[in-house]
Length: 380
Ligand code: ATP
Ligand code: MN
Ligand code: MN
Image (tube, rainbow, N blue to C red; front, top):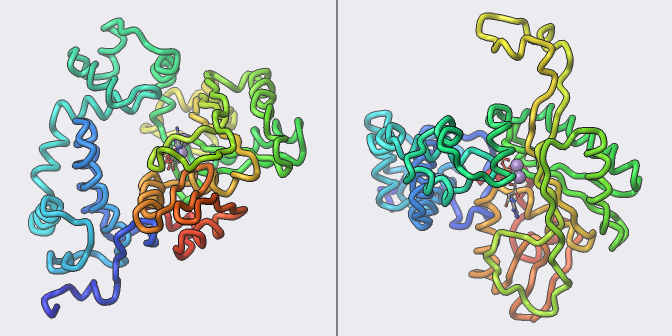
């Protein structure tokens, strides 16, 4: 083991991302950005296995507290396959990876990146459009594609939805939703989840989890919230899904499914902006013209509302806080290491044949025999 990195003895890296502390900021961005581009590109080709392999390698590097300076440092680190090692080695030597550069230049990657960034457009749809010759946003309009209602909203508000949501904007929307909720029932609770709960300063949307301390009283809340927000003219688009989860008598069939069955609403919110933005951000030549003008006093923002009964709240909170990879790893750990099945509703112990209840995230980690990882360190 003498040849092994100075890194490994001091910083043992466990195999599962849910066993590691992964902060938002870390010293190996150069490598993780590159690996995530390869992961994303594999996803665009629907190669899930390859995509996950690159992502796992990236995720391990995100948990390293010091900057990688030699391939020797890779020795002893889990999940970094041969291909990822080659990419890392090339970056160490040349500063960039020729493979990543090639992907970034490729027509397919560039087109898929834009198309999948549209609300309502997944890899399957983007791939079909690509094969029909669609390469950019303008091509969608000129090709006269039939769009779903969701995609229509995605196209209509594309510019706003492509610009990141700031923490300030997320807080403002949370406030608005809280006021609407409080006017229905002062005991109902709204919690910000997703990336913002993990400490991100920017996000692609705002994820809000709604619950009520009295079991059953959460039912019907969402419809009332939507009525209020809609009457205030704040919903540019929305689509609701009913709760399809019934208290289980049997163990979850698909423990690895990431989709949950809570009542929810996917929406595009109309966020009012402070009227005199120009006075806060001095107008310069680089300020986009439309933002210097007080006429554009709102911005479209993607908002997800999810409702959970209080008995499932801790599981819902854990499930909606992310990151997506952290969640995937929690479920894989539960299934492979503990013979348990975890989803956003419950944890089932296959050995004891029972559901394990929890009222806090801490209790869920304890059920799994994992040290508690706070939200800010779940950026795997
Ligand atoms: P971003 O800043 O890009 O929004 P994020 O981590 O908040 O980052 P989201 O896509 O908003 O990403 O997802 C937040 C969490 O909610 C994730 O952990 C994901 O597992 C969960 N989630 C998202 N969509 C669904 C869904 N349809 N069903 C169940 N869980 C979901
Ligand atoms: Mn989010
Ligand atoms: Mn979301």
